[in-house]
Image (cartoon, rainbow, N blue to C red; front, side, top):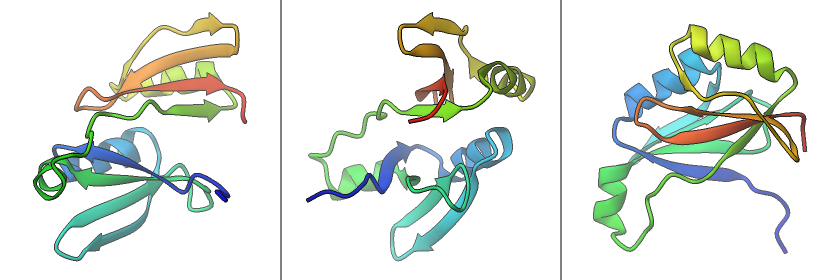
Length: 125
């Protein structure tokens, strides 16, 4: 039986640039990092987060497991103040979309420096 979603794998072209984007522009923290022949970096919105994102080198993963789908997963983040986060990301030169009202609430999209797109919704689970 499953108990929770533990990690999301995000396959990136440049791990160092990706870590800088997530930590410097979005305020995430590095939870763990390892390099046992294959480097991976675990990030999260906070050290206490239940679910983390692991940044993997897309090229190395493709070499090891060519059958894997390395496309960007659709991730929905939550925030308590959508307008404030939207303005903060814009001020850090993050590419953000317009805030739109959906049946589920207010939402906007943003992308990292590799053009992976993600969504943010006001509220929580």
